[in-house]
Image (tube, rainbow, N blue to C red):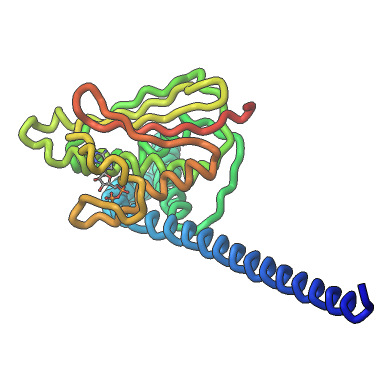
Amino acid sequence: MGQPVLLSLLVLLAVAQGVVLAYWAIRDRRFRSAHRAARHLHSADTHAGRLALVGEIAGSIAHEISQPLSAILTNADAAENLLGEPDPPLDEIRRMLADIRRDDLRANDIVRHLHSLLKRRELQTTMLDLNEVAATALSLIQPVARKRLVTVRSCLDPMLPPVRGDAIHLEQVLLNLMMNAMDAMASNTANGAAERILDVTTDRYDKYSAAITVTDTGPGIAAAYRPRIFDSFFSTKQEGMGLGLAIARTIVHAHGGKIWQEGTSAGGAAFKFTIPLQAA
Ligand code: ADP
């Protein structure tokens, strides 16, 4: 091979290598920015969904908070009056102060949870008791359930091993599922309030994970909709955003768990999700 030919071949090779490198650089950048955009979207979606959910729950919870607040006021007024007496009953005043402290903690707890649901945050996993997550979500949903004449029942496995997860995000998954269950039962009026039953159970799913199941006595999910319910922006509700289940799935998958829907023998819907055990 002559020297000029060898030189041209080397130049060609260098150009080709440059093109390939440039291609990969662009591809990589595109991939990374698409990935970033997707992550941002997920986090923005999660935040938007959380805001809508919190908005819905906040109305009922405002009522819940006003109870301990007015109890605090009544006790403070009464204690002040007693202190004005010539021989104040100190034990009674002490009891009143204890009641004030308890009511304040209750109100504070509700506000703290709402606040953490409102904040946009990344996943922060710790060792968790799923029963505690369920109990918190159940207490947040109670006022809404009362208003909607839904009976809430829970069966939490006391032997459940700890999982690794983000309590706030998992609470959100549960709240989304419970709100959906209540929406589904809204038309159960013909059968009366007793027919609106929301069951929440926790149990060991397999060697590696624990599960939470939310079951309702609504009409269930039409076969035609089943493949689409977890899609973003799929909703059969007039005012639905179609983000609840998509967000729930994003969160559960981020934990390494799975979420799916099952029918119930009574014709309602059951949603189950698993979260890996801490020790798995
Ligand atoms: P949205 O609640 O805004 O509609 P979701 O993503 O939470 O959004 O739910 C998507 C759809 O899945 C709902 O519109 C409804 O058709 C269906 N769905 C979810 N949960 C239930 C349920 N428990 N019973 C019946 N249908 C349900």
